[in-house]
Length: 187
Image 1 (cartoon, rainbow, N blue to C red):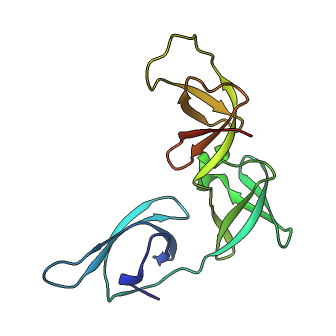
Image 2: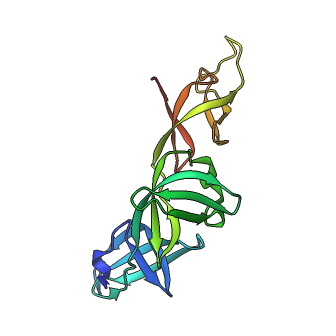
């Protein structure tokens, strides 16, 4: 159990027997009455969003969620297949949990996997990732406008808008929360 005032972003709460990840938390201390936290949560099983107001002295049940490191192997269409890097067991993460995950998973890379009641419920993707530009159109010199962008496709199939100077086979960093170009990576 956790007090309403102790809930922070990233906390996992158990509501109606489902794990909810706190994605936003706003603390409100009105002039009269009890302080409370306005909490926006994402259901880790079905992706639905719930907003709830919890008084700071109230107790809420927090979920026991384990994290294991998994090395991404492949997707069979129904599941993303990972190998637990400690026990070498196979972990199946249903693709229905997050269809867009396929754009961020790279074969052989390791990712933290959230486990609730002995079943995988989510894969944590880094906030910034490096991708190789697989498809890019060339532009004509002098055809530029300040801040002009073009769409490219990464090696995982993700479409990102980048500045015109980015070419095929270059590495770029992408913010995975907004799918926005961050910078060109030289290596």
